[in-house]
Length: 445
Image 1 (cartoon, rainbow, N blue to C red):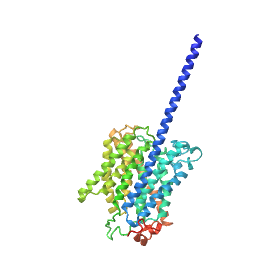
Image 2: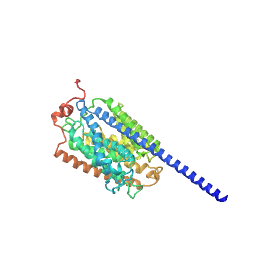
Image 3: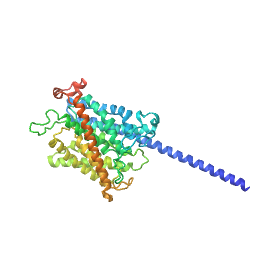
Image 4: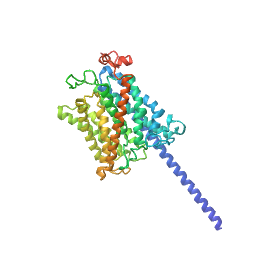
């Protein structure tokens, strides 16, 4: 009787264990599905940012060059998609183990996941690729705005391919792919949660080199070096583009958790919104103080600067710090716009260098100042540690050396071979007809 009871008890335990493990598998399956759907949805939101960049840039430009810029924005994600699929993704995430098939790489470069084939042909790898491809496209489009109205269309496609295939993924590997910057022995290693440096810093600093090497638009500067204002043709596009970008930024930042089950998403989204609001309000009233008018275009750029700055730090800082980061981003933007245009005499029609380059660097540094230790143990100065700021500073220096150096070499080679700039006669008459055979507004003078 005792023996039978023991057998029955063992059978009950085995049955209970089977039910328990089955429930665990079900829970893990639900979590996996939720995280997959979340990341894909956020990737679609980031894709929507291409429409924002298109509207924003087109609004800042003259009517005669609108179609060319729209074509650049459209082709950026097409080119980046193919290049990033072929090898950019492998260089960036090989060795990161973030998904299947990404198991080969070192602290300098990845080398697994080419063409999303063999071991990397998996739903988790495709999810990560799709999300990150949108980031690569954004970095390329940032450059397009700074060199607009005088840059050759097909040369633009070439540098977009190089940026998405080499410049972006190599630095991205150092930060997100298990590279040496992520493993610095100071603090928690360099942290760039969603890409203030990896995406916006790369784009903004490449834009700096490109705009400098192609030269200013014809008529931008007087013989004595003073700049002329070259008004955009449709400021409603600027506001509309900003709204598209802000909407997409929720996917950009919060989606970088790569899963909705990471409940930090609500804090990240809130910090993004607060920084954007602060940047817009601060620059609106700065412009009002100096000019006596409420410059809504400057407010739009202020909102974008706030978003850029909080892209690195949004997961690590409290809400009040997001407001402070947005406030400082607005000041940096205002100073940088003046410095780039008046001191460096670099013509940037959309302010990409200042919005993305200068504030991309500020975003990286802000992690080392405002991180409070509540997420992944990342602690900045306010939490009593200066080591994280040192890691962030090293990351900024490496970012500038890599991007400015490789960017200069890239544009120099392109200048000596295919050329960077359209003829002055084309610039005067408009690039749309020259490059695409039709105006953006046919039938309208």
